Length: 89
Image (cartoon, rainbow, N blue to C red; front, side, top):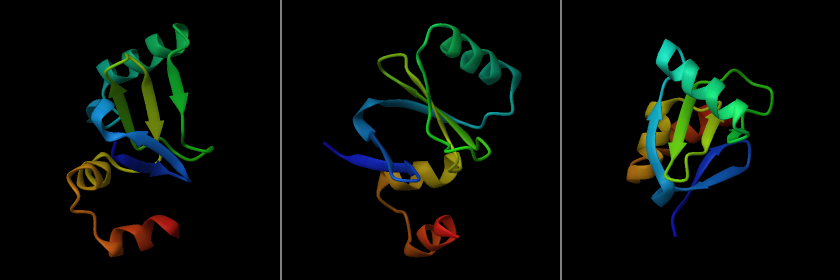
């Protein structure tokens, strides 16, 4: 099982991820609100600004303070050390 760091020590199974999207679009905001109402929302931002929304195969919606592009690189295994250093700052 491959775990990816979604920010601030939080991990998620890469095999469970269906999609990673930016949170600005209205349809994504509706997905987040719906998940909140169904008690299926996991906020892994630790109080930071939400930069990506992850939808899993169990219909859980996970909020992350890491950008969708960075998470996609982490899942594909092409994440560089430079991105990790920027994340820590």
